[in-house]
Image (cartoon, rainbow, N blue to C red; front, side, top):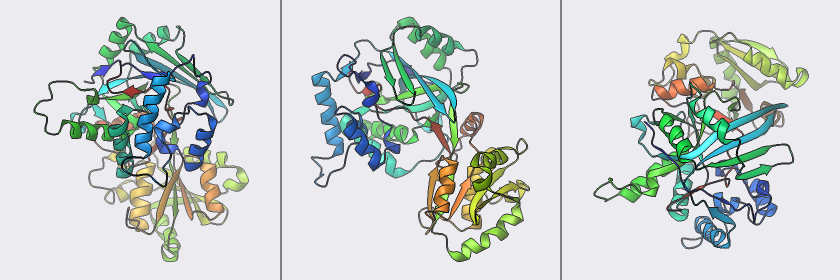
Length: 439
């Protein structure tokens, strides 16, 4: 199904760049102005100058962050700061990290995947996107002619066919290694052995791919391809822009960590706020808990402790210094209030119930037109803190989406609400990237 290819990866030259950890950066979508400033100061060769450069007051059509990013790639290639591999390869990536005092290792493969339209179901999305972010990445493609950060996608490896090959390849010398002060380690291997590449790509060609993180990048790459192909009489000749860089992780990888996407809301009128309890009591059983006293982890354990298949949520901000644990009485009572195209699986997701039932039906929130301001955090303690400090009025705490639910909903052709999942940690930008025509 999927057309998987090796490519001539572009990466930092380890003979000139000694500390790889100082030059990598997060992907564009989590770089705040403060993080951007810190990365600029961290190292003169930090990849943020390419991935998400500064906007300047004098920016115009001939001098802007996209043009400066393209110029930076050109200069760093000329200076040898960046290197293009001689042989096409797929890249084995291991990310060692710690989350809540537990150590993880996530293993993945970075390669090229031929762009396919969504309706072909070769590459399957799982959540909605925001058009503004798509526009930013499209501008990058036009100017830089590169995929600077990978799309994260999932695949099935039920017979450990790919895993066994990666075990063998990880015994070789690394191409790059980044070590951070917090103990996080990133290793990268170049797999340019023709037999190994063929074994991996042949197996994956029979599998659909599920986008985990990077829907904007995929949609931008599709749009770029369509714009480049406009007016072209034939698509029989492959072009570099017919492919996009992806990092593939197996569904069962023990390091595949999905964090919950808690909702934060402000701008709620007094009348709406005072009427919420009546609506919640109609559809949920409610138990008061005290996360500030018992500890947030105890409250989250209660959130996760429901029977298999039951729907549990938590809302903080309706009562002083306490949270309300909500358990849905009967899924059938709200099914008619969900979008008509939702399957039973999508309709019972925590994020679907918060977004489409509580916010839209009970509270009257209309995306894009309401006075409500909706934001997201993946840290429950931070969610409670923002409400306690009155930065937000309410925090809705949800359970994380399980990998098998992503597959089930994507297979049905549906999408979850936007910001349903957060794959932690984010794939770094600058480890290796795909420059059109390189090699």
